[in-house]
Image 1 (cartoon, rainbow, N blue to C red):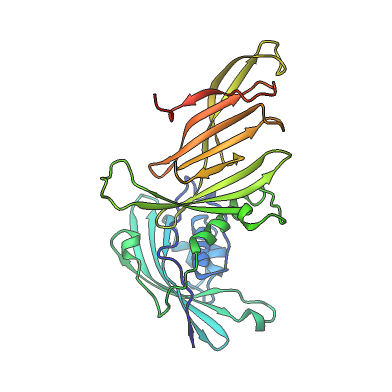
Image 2: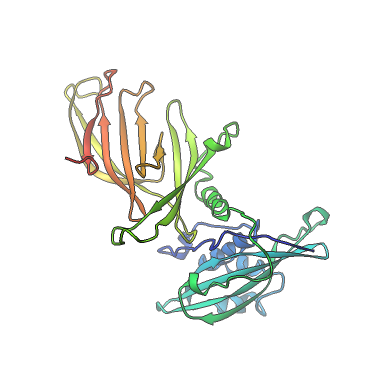
Length: 343
């Protein structure tokens, strides 16, 4: 009896960090796709024992021999496609299309494509020690071309089941990066915990008749205080590659006539910029392709800072920033940066 376990087109591209150890730790055996991501995450982080242990049958004569095979490898980028599955004697066997690009320490690159076979024994009938989803074998060959072009169309006979693997991947990435810094509220509705938006767009160098690209924006709840709520954002490109967003934010200096915040505001100026990985009381407007934030400095909201970031060229750019530094019971902000409002 056959069943299908699928992804939506290309799942993900793992981006190379400045240093391999800076790549966020990922150890996820919940699906064939995430297991392959975990495998090459371990390789990129030089955690070869972890990578070696994802295989049921050793991929080399010894761990030392396996590690030696990656001696000249600086980073591996991964793309996965549509997985298929088939029941076999109390197990599910998955076939997963895979393409990788291995970059050597000297900058040289080699591309490989093929199929990985993975097996999961029925968790309901297992005892101890428990055997999680594991890799049985890999059949990869050297090829030439871009990853998305050389990725096999299929491995096995599965058909798409509509699983939103990009969303699942975004949730896993959020958990791995922000899990400790973003306290959750279990009593909140799911729509408050996470929201997803599709962003159709074109680059400025493209013509009006160019088919639109499509990015996806994921907003995650990241804790709240008495009057402010924080959100973290992850952006997915067309290939499913995920990027945790950082937002340019002005650092301001406020001068009061009396020397303290009870007095009249004498001057507000920008003294630098920081990059923030969360926005406060933020919303996304699909009509204007903008993210806005409204950071209350106290509960009644008469003193605050507010920013606007617009989506263009495939990411979000700061285009406006307003500050109301007067604690006078009124909302009368001063615009200290504006690349958004026309003359």
